Length: 102
Image (cartoon, rainbow, N blue to C red; front, side, top):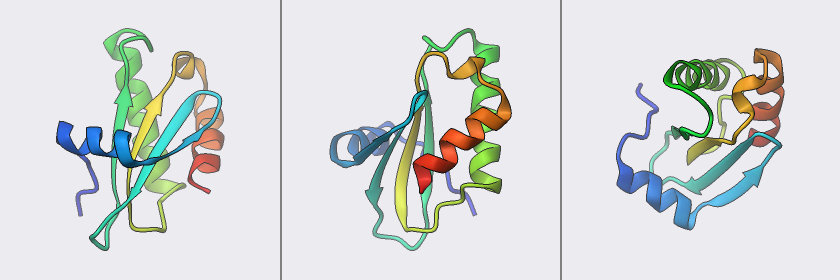
């Protein structure tokens, strides 16, 4: 099953209506879904770095959500990275993301 948010309209709706949770390097927006499945989108700004750093961070975030922090509730999420997030190693990213989903 595909759990990706793809449309800009979905992202903007979650930004406006969603509940915000912050960690040091990430922000999680969540809003309830009317379907019995979660969807997640990743927002990584150009402030993070060049394309290779942004892509590496996005791949790490996808893997952490897939393995460790799989959301239990039926919500739609946007996980936004803040500047400095690309400097973290995998375990530091994992710790922050798991805390956000708790």
